[in-house]
Image (cartoon, rainbow, N blue to C red; front, side, top):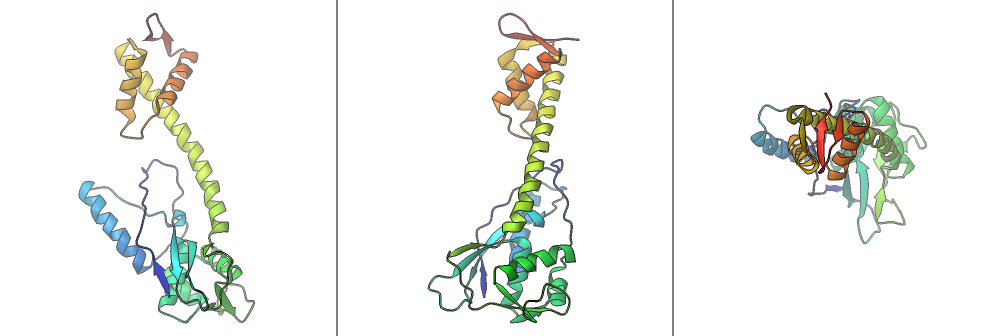
Length: 245
């Protein structure tokens, strides 16, 4: 069967990050649920009253395939969490039809079909009738004679490219949000203090925004310059800055 790795890395993102909500319902496999529950207990002990939403569509992992014949070293499959949910079902079943997989995972058709298609294309699963596309009435079994030139096989390539597009868009939006956050902090501080040294302003900005994200000093300086160009603040003698009312 498949062995699910013990190592796990979790990235906790603030709610204001512009990530898409899950587009499908998903029942994660027991192996993942146990780990997720342990993290939730740890998190809620430290942050009571907060809410966690798991973005399963952005998660991925590795699985060892111990069922494959004639191989000295088990293959390691790099998979999306949805693919993991599908494949781990085969630890309990020799064959599953499309409807059984959908019932067990609760994945929407538009998500389940491409995930099974990738596993068929990689020859990890075999469809019956042979050559069938994922659909109701088609059953799938593990390919016990799977072969690949690499021991570590990435089955997540197509999904990975979609995630990269979303991640790139997200990164651009996050950078813009951080720029606005820095500029708001700079204006707020200067409006209150009227005048202050450049180095003191930088330190106060760090203190004000560090709870939201760790700011880089070059970014703070860049945004101070941007606000000078917009005539919010001006440079005086002795490295001092002044707020322009």
